[in-house]
Length: 145
Image 1 (cartoon, rainbow, N blue to C red):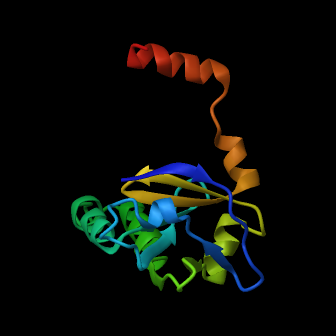
Image 2 (image 1 turned 90 degrees about the vertical axis):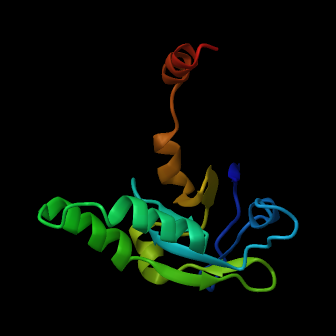
């Protein structure tokens, strides 16, 4: 599973290095070579392994009733923004310009491993979504910690 927080930088060609711990998150015998990038929620970029993207589409998007205009817009947003991107030999991935613009990524990046997906954020935007101490205390109570 993907997990962790990382802070690489974007290079001049629009590439970012995917940390080795994420590339090997599913075992030493499974090295991540391709990610499906798409526009995410809250102005981030979501990145999936191909099989997780296929499952997400099949289980989450396909069942949405097409008669609902909001569903159609979400499907356009997620499917229209989807791009297969190969990692190079150094573990870098090229982020398309449209995705960089959507996420307002310029240089400082926060990458989060979130179980079946990776989120790529402009650090400045991600910091606005970090929970405050009161929220964390409430979560701890909900979790019984």
